[in-house]
Amino acid sequence: MRQKSQSRQRGTVSRVVATAALAALTSLGVRARAAEQATLENGFTLRCDHHALVDGHMRLYLSSGEDSYIEFPANEVATFEKVPDPPSATAPVSVKKLRRSEKLTPADLHQMLARAGSAHNLDVDLLASVVKAESDGNARAVSRAGARGLMQLMPGTAANLGVQNSFEPEQNVRGGSTYLDALLNRYHDNLALALAAYNAGPQAVDKYHGIPPYRETRLYVARVIHEFNRRVLAREAQASAPHVASR
Image (cartoon, rainbow, N blue to C red; front, side, top):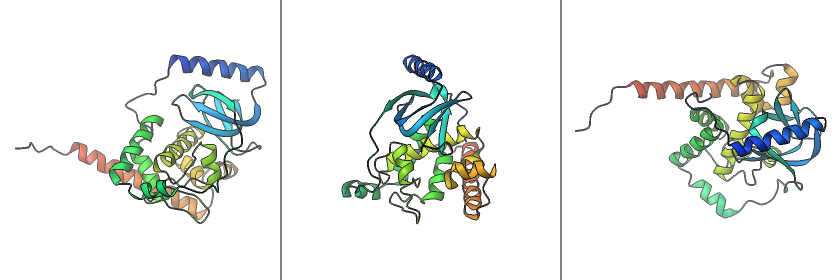
């Protein structure tokens, strides 16, 4: 799931900022409560209720409780700042952007997924498999529960991830990739648990100490992993196939 060919690089300035922020958190008893915006070292921003440094990982809590959170290695979070409440998730979506998303081509989608994969060190075929299972590539998909877009972000999750328009493909992919990356960090790169949490929520995975006994979640995890394996095998077969010299 993680790309092995290239490790993530950190900027010196961002490291200094992160170190100073973590030192300040430690001196304050680690936890700070407020509506906040976290800026990651890759430049992406996420909203959270509060944060805490736990065992070397920074947890971003999505509500005032302690059960709903995503986490990153501490050095991947650069800064925190207080922010006003996020805009209402029921805000109207611009028609212009919806029309543009309808014209999304497979090549466009692949480029978006490749950029997101590079930013989060995730295999592009894993992201493509999640998109396949979530929306089948439909940027305007809406689930019965209200999840939206390519990676089916719930309005509250999208707002916490800094996604203003879940029907805008680039924003949706960036947000969904950030969330999946955080879940993989939370579950120590256990893909099955991360996917289960993506589908049913981290609270359910933690409650059952594994994949929840929900038929939908178990089928979802199996479907994504099957599709991911299929794509990887096809990619490897293509790479190993003899190349025919052009004439």
